[in-house]
Image 1: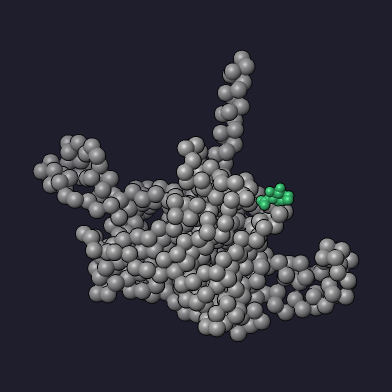
Image 2: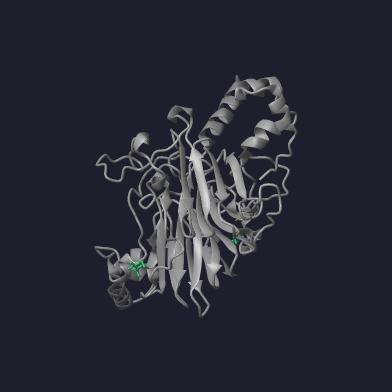
Length: 438
Ligand SMILES: *[C@@H]1O[C@H](CO)[C@@H](O)[C@H](O)[C@H]1NC(C)=O
Ligand SMILES: *[C@@H]1O[C@H](CO)[C@@H](O)[C@H](O)[C@H]1NC(C)=O
């Protein structure tokens, strides 16, 4: 009996750890937001699948700087669910950050998202602050072009351009609607204001200082506040484990196996655990498919552990392609940095295997929903480059051709001949080919 009770407790704790993370997990192939519906749910209600087009997964203009002529010298271009309705229920989004020389994105938090950033141009000083429990330790670093850095969910963080030229970054966030709480605006710019008595005591300064600060903020309050609705959603969902502490930097050498990786001691953590360089460098595409990936997953950035997001750089030779594949644990959101890509994904049997496809140019953004088969092909005679964010620290790749025709040991040619309705010789021929793992 005692043993049974123990097993029950173990089972219960396993079950409770199975309920995880941030945005709602999809319960169908796609749930394109009907932004005009008056029905309120967690996220948005879905448009009918028959009315969906590739444009629901698409946005252009990510190559264009936004106007940074404001008090902080900073501006954001959003690719959230409000701009790309196809992101609804998919738990990921993308933003472009523009910094004037010495401009800054002031301290803020995202209540529903971890952020992973890569610098396209310029030099940024960035950091985040651990919570009280970890002595409000600041983890900070100077980033150059091609560097990647992670800001864990909910922690206060900032980015500042420390160069005398404009800086540009692309950030992915692990929510379709991450929210922004700018600390200064929330504390000193709330409407109605927080009592100056309360703030004077909190900041241990004279009330006059607080009154002065409060007088400053009403004007800038709108600058950085993106879409901030349904903050209080208490439904707990989605893919990677939700963090149960500020940070859980992967101990990649541990022999203990858990879901994800076990954590390094906080005292041993440095900014480099959240950092990777070289995202500005093309990878070698001299292979059969003319395509290669540079990963910024948990194995490259141990600080991503438990945070449910990652970044990859995709390089395409002229006419190269990323062959049909799926990510079992992630939705992907891609932006084209250079070149012209033909991309698409295929809905499941239930939706008649409909192909949703589009030609993307520089600055375009496109979404590939979790688990669906998709591809990207360079249709230009120059190399193409894209950055993709994935809604898992370890999204996984299943390349269809490799899995079906290149498995070890092979799937029986009888089975495949029947499945594809061709002669066994065709299957044998296919199985004999070299399938490039991309
Ligand atoms: C941000 O940039 C957009 C597009 O350039 C512009 O319309 C908007 O006014 C800018 N916002 C601020 C606060 O500067
Ligand atoms: C926080 O401070 C306490 C007391 O000084 C110390 O024991 C602990 O190791 C510190 N924690 C971190 C994460 O630095």
